[in-house]
Length: 160
Image 1 (spheres, rainbow, N blue to C red):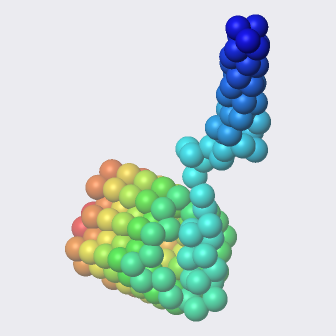
Image 2: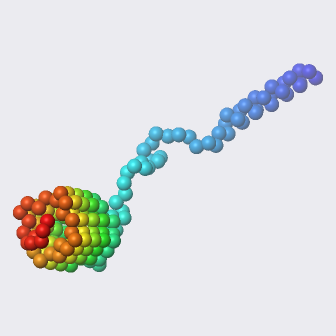
Image 3: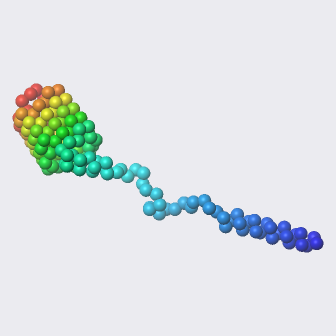
C-alpha cells in the first residue's frame, strides 16, 4: 500500500508539471517585422486626403497641409485661408488669385511661384523661399516676410 501511495504521488506530480509546461497560453515575443508596426513611422493618409480635397473642390480653408509637395501644381483660385503650409513645397506652383489670408507658410518653398492677385493678407512667410516669385497685385496687408528670401521677386510694391 505504501508503494502504491508513493507511485500515485509521483504520477500526480509528473502530470501536474507536464500540464504546467504544456499549457502556456501567453503570447510569445517575436522579432518578425510584421508582428508589430513601427509606431514612429508617420502616416500621410490624412495629408493625401486633404490634397485630393484641395485639388477636387479647390477649397481647403484651415487645412493642415504641413510638408506637402505641391510643386508645379495648378492652384489657381484655391481657398487656403488659415491653412498650415509649413515646410510645404510650392515651387513653380500657380497660385494666381488664391486666397492664402491668414495662412502659415513658414519655411515654405515658393521659388518661381505665381501669386498674381493672391490674397496674402495676414499670412506668415517666415524664412520662406520666394526667389523669382511673382506677387503682382497680391494683397500683402499685414503679411510677415521676416527672414524670407525675396530675391528677384516681382510685383511686391509694399514695404517688406
